[in-house]
Image (cartoon, rainbow over all chains, first blue to last red; front, side, top):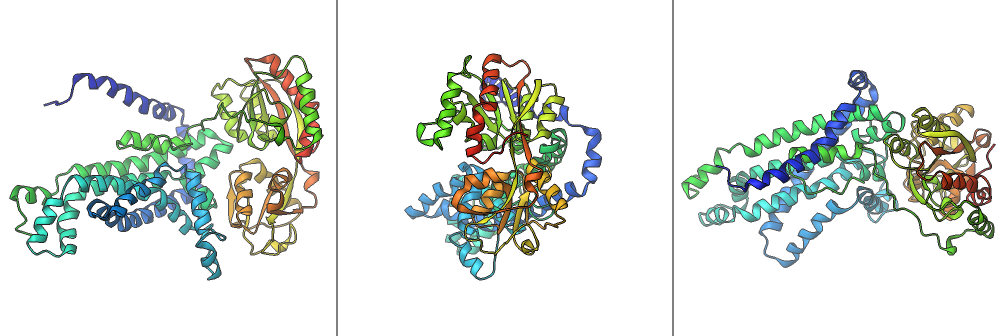
Length: 273
Length: 272
């Protein structure tokens, strides 16, 4: 059953320990008795609410933009489109603060686009919109990269068959591409959401930090650390809990065999499309 | 500081990635700035460097944890030292975690007190400099801010959050001057406040005079009445169990002695 070499268990154990020990140490240090009072405070609630609102907005934006973007990169034969694949990964390697600076010089009041927006009376800085923009900038690549990889390794044949059978490109997209890519979309979305939830540097640099408007959970934790690092750890438990819930849901979604994908595969064709 | 691990796909890795910003910030031990003579601000500071290097025993090898606002001036006073610059509270966390430092330089009394309470300080801390708040606007002052008064109403004002030293000082000042501030953002470091002003995102910000000095022509500085009466204080102390105690003593002597002249060229006031 186990089709992997037995020696893989050794690096497996080291890897798990490497990741788990710091987190376990953190949980050991958290002042659990103070957690309820902390969660009852206006500041923590505002931060949690703002984080959830902005992360869900970001996730919707990431899906709307990211799925078609990944599809074009994966399927287009144009050379310049392939080159864009590299561009898409740039925000992943940018230090978050640099991502924030990039957004500032683009959309800030004196930025490339921002100066024109300012002339029309639109200022993005210091608003919740700026938080969503910052999160989308850093989170979008995670969906695109994971989905693009999945799309390239699967599905093109089914799409071609569906097209041959007379399905329009949009119909192929909704009835073939999306169901086949569903697990990758789910895991990519979870990655993006998690990245948005932990987003810190770009938000701080581009959007600022004000309770209820721009101060998300990571920013609140960072600020709390200034006065009491143990309380900061306690609040980060909340962040981790949200992340684990999201990742667990997505793991469930992406590992569950969808009713449509296997039927397509087992039919060997797309008669019902 | 959180970007090292990126290609992560498992639940645990994700959790670790999310938790990374919460762990004590890693510090860069290798931040010893290369202070070439060209960066020496004035003749006085060069003299100060000469004096400190003549001192015996030398400061060579000392590991100094210092507040970020000292990152430019300290290397001019003693260049043969290993510096780690970060926010004062972050440095206290690192010291509590057992980081092997010889000297701790805090940008305020509260964080030095925290370090003393945690038992990581050897002996009594000494005050070596002061700093006070000023109002800065972008160089062209687009929102026509005239002072720490009602001309700030409806303007995009950025301040430090109350949790950090400059924010606490800002609140005290506002209370003393009976001014109600309605900031659009409360930043966690004074550097972020300055950045918002120099980039033109904010109409005005409240920073230390040393930050305004550093920003030079990028900002217009407006003094705040009463700010100099309640200055922020900088403290220096030897760390318990310092690996290089002699170098630590020499460093403290260099900062509190000949270093004062160099500190003043950066806008720092004398210890009181």
